[in-house]
Image (cartoon, rainbow, N blue to C red; front, side, top):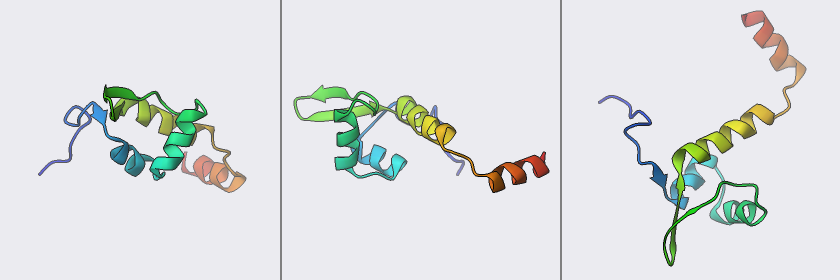
Length: 81
């Protein structure tokens, strides 16, 4: 069985899936949403929301890119290059 590509995955994902993707709790995600620092949810019904997978992945990638990199990691990366 081959691994799923992003084209094989659903475009909208549940908050449960977002929790797994980000390693954050539902309450933490909701707090970030309330603060306006997490991606907008898509309302599917009166009590159901989902998130666009690509937007969540982009949010995660932005967090990774904005983290401070310590000197040991820089040195290791420079040696590998």
